[in-house]
Image (cartoon, rainbow, N blue to C red; front, side):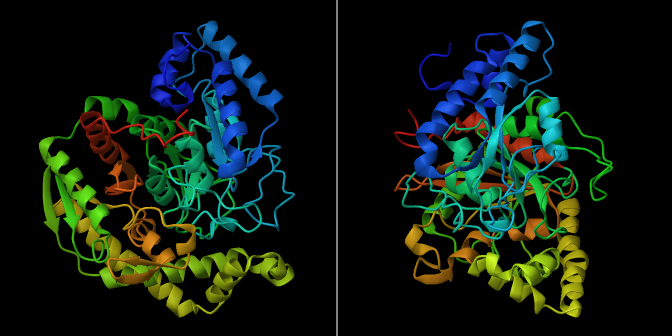
Length: 480
């Protein structure tokens, strides 16, 4: 048995090694996760549905027997995980955080979930989210708000709110989520965990309730970078059920980050737009992070951008228009079953003309994506920016927030630094880099060209190892 710190707060990397050597068993991990769910979920509201414990224990005993017999499948074998309640798992209620889907029981597993199960991972349940993944705060009028374990008066971020909180507190060891404008990275930043949004098409979206299909990405939330690499390695790859999934070969990401540091790479810091309203403490921690990169042998240089004024409007037009199309039938027949916030967004989407939608797509492909591809081909290898320009707002700051005397819409402030990388489909990983004076986590994004997850994860892993800043643990009682 692991001594000291509760082993449900260890990383998958640490625990998988102990599972392989039979120092602990999958049953031990299930015990601890269910215990923590029982203790903490009533106050944090991270789960909407928890699986029947008998099923999870049965899966754990099967994994234990397989490992004992030498049939070890890999680092996710026997690892408990959870999923955002917008992803299908056979027989487990999937509500999408909505009233409309409150009694929806899928008859099949999403491709990403099937791949996790095939590797021996054990499903614990589904995590809370903004209704239909249509928000960034973790607020849900139907299933309750998810609270930040670092300070329960603060929001968790969203829409993968319950995922970040579950992983942060050890209720789950990893979680599969979705990211349309920052929904994996933002809550990860606000809750002090790692959030990976890979390249568009890297992971199949089959079996996932769509929000805006051309912006939707499947990602993961983990305690450390190695864990994210292991999950990505497991769930990536071509899927004939999703024609947007890529045929590109899936690398061994865990081997890449362990054996390659990419020292000497040029890393660009775009000052325009991403730092226009950034909180001073977030900025200070970001520049401390840059100093660490320089000490590791990376070249950190300023970079200039031209089209920053187009980031928000192009993403918003596509996001709202596509969501309105997805919800067209329900919007006609069940309008009263949406929350006011989501209903208003869908109405806004119906007012976006086909001309404006096509124009936004053209700007993204011909200007924004092209500019970043050129920059990352000719001048820089990667880009780094703060994940969010603020740490977690209080619940009384849901509408607006004051940043150094400038009042912004809270939604816009939280999404500001993440939406572009959904629009252009580039991979981005958010890692925790420090705490503010009032003990709230701050994250930084590392971004690369399409299908360079190995590079961005390697830089993140090297920083994490050298700075010893893996495993940010919330305060008592969640650290107990």
